Length: 280
Image (cartoon, rainbow, N blue to C red; front, top):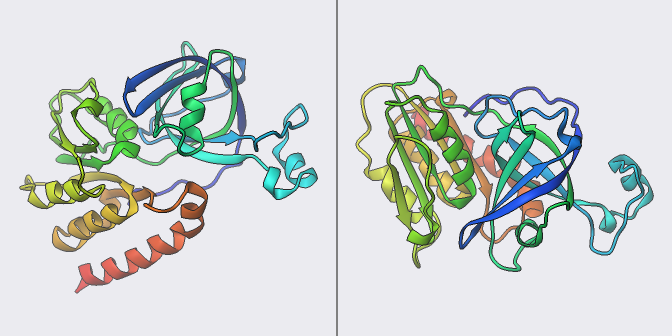
């Protein structure tokens, strides 16, 4: 797993919607800009993420916005809710931050906001975090993810030098959800159809004839299938932990609040089980 840098004080940014674009039936792009991004920098990680703040319905917070003041003066049910999203790209020259949202109609919080977003709308966020970038010294790269990891996988592929050896598997609902990525790596698009999320990804990684040499892997998405791919890599292929960036971005049956509350314990249990098996 990629080593996480030490925690830094979180900085709150305020940005305005510049434009939006429907990329596919279930992916909405929102480009943010404005003077509030003057001090923002996304660095070199390709899995940079931001934590967007959404106000509680019907609640107006005093200006200038101060989260600590809100938490001190408002009941907990009126605190803003955070949702974590990958930075698809950052353009420092034009000071524009691009974030892609998986949408399912009115389901969820961030997706409906992205659908309704209009130029001039304001959104606040903390960030960026992130720890992964394709290792230039690796012999080859493995990238696997569902829709939630597509922005990070696309950013990683676009960061790879031309001619790099990489196998990229992305599972989406169907062919209408495929996207164009500016890379010479041929992405294997896996169409889920009616199968459980991640099942085709597990099959694809299991069936891959691993090239010779050291692999650097990025595997993210729904926690259930990520757990199985982690076992394949650590136990069956003996890939060292330091050559893996692997985590469940979400989990079936949980919203982000519920998943984040249990994620650390889940990951620790999975890691302990699989590390024991890999050492056997």
